Length: 269
Image: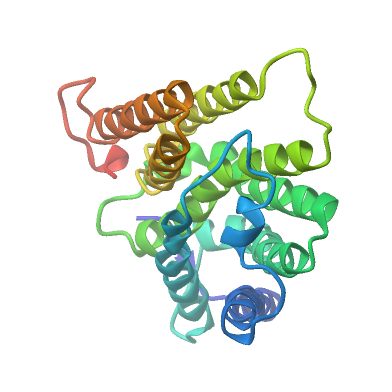
């Protein structure tokens, strides 16, 4: 179990900011969806997605991600919740990520393409860096530790989805603006992105032993497979399916300790 102490006034203030940032992220998504304000994330992704696309239903993953982020934020607002190392170390990074994904929704709705790239890669970076620098702390969380389920899992899942969404966002904008380098065919660039995402996902999973992170990556790659299969791009669809299965299989192998043939509380999913 991670060490827990009573939160200081400054830490309580940070927690309220986490709650406000989570509310902003969720409300921004819902206002866009139900308020018919500009493009939805799926529509933005579908615009100029000739190089790399994700099927529309894959974006439904935002539902469980939002639920996890709400649980993460509400728990911190409860007076009885102590200040653990996980809550402390991920507090400000999560605020930046939550503000980033909320702002991304607005930027995508108004088709501010460059802003979407900055926001999505920025949101990914502020989560990936603490996930990797605190990998030992995450691995040490027992299966029953609340910080595993209400800090590491929600933020890990968000980071996982952003890992696949970021290159899709970049290639979509580059393709639409005619900025994709012509040295390689668009399908080759897309395959490079797919391979890079899968390799990076396995690296982060190996470091953290956190199953919440690779699952959205595998889901997104599956969405690429379906979309590219419908488009008739057999090369890219096959590559995406293989990458999805490798990420999923590799993640289960890593997080369940199959490599060592043992199970340890500190490395459970």
